[in-house]
Length: 359
Ligand SMILES: Nc1ncnc2c1ncn2[C@@H]1O[C@H](COP(=O)(O)OP(=O)(O)OP(=O)(O)O)[C@@H](O)[C@H]1O
Ligand SMILES: [Mg+2]
Image (cartoon, protein in one colour):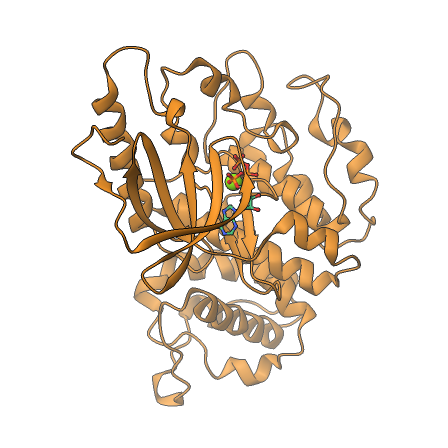
């Protein structure tokens, strides 16, 4: 890396502390950048080097992609802080987290369903952000090791997003490692003519949600991939999920072999929001007064789909209206994008909602 004028050299303000772990890309250390505590991933030099003299183009591509990721900041995505060179290695400086989701699940058996849904919701929100980013960011290696949390387990962030794009295609062993952790991979990425789009990440999210709901590490046979329906191939894992578990229908949808039948991240995020709402003590009528503030223009397309879903679930017009407003409030709160103005003067009810027939 030192040969490239494109990447900054490690500054003296970046110091390395104890080793946190090792992955396929390199070793992760705790460290400090100035006064900020950070995680430093030291990427193995041989992963960046080619056999010939093509070093600079690869590093340039690495850096371009890194800059893209650096710009993608979200509350449920681990922040990429900077990229430096040190000798022939690359140092990826990231936000420091306390533990992996895998470790959290192992140490906290018997999570309540509400807690399970909350974790899934945060993950879906992070993935929705990556998929809606311009240009779209595919994760391609969504596993319980690549989801990081704080000690208390209420901060949940996707990490290593888009890292698969860093893998130089000239490296055969990296391409063959491309599918990531096999139990999380969608069948279409594991067959001879492998392909991967955003619905591949959705499949992995389904496996993760199953792991969160059962608190058991996923296992599945290596046979029948792409031939047998995933619901059958993963029947042993699915059998651990209670029949009436609130996450079951969503998990099964994510595990569909047919990509079209899998929901997108936004729909998953929305459904989980509703589940949380149902499980919470929030008074719907309290929230109803905060309905649709100045949101018609920005959120109009979203509102229409929300209305459709809520309409199917509610028992009365009033119930429907309150559910709708609660869902929007939760959206606002989770996204932290806009303010909630509780002043009744600003309330506008969507005409679609008003004209909706009683259910
Ligand atoms: N930002 C971070 N903050 C705290 N710990 C981290 C951070 N990133 C990684 N770690 C720790 O370092 C370990 C190794 O991470 P790394 O991403 O290199 O490998 P992995 O996630 O186990 O596998 P993969 O190479 O497929 O991503 C993780 O399991 C985690 O314990
Ligand atoms: Mg990782």
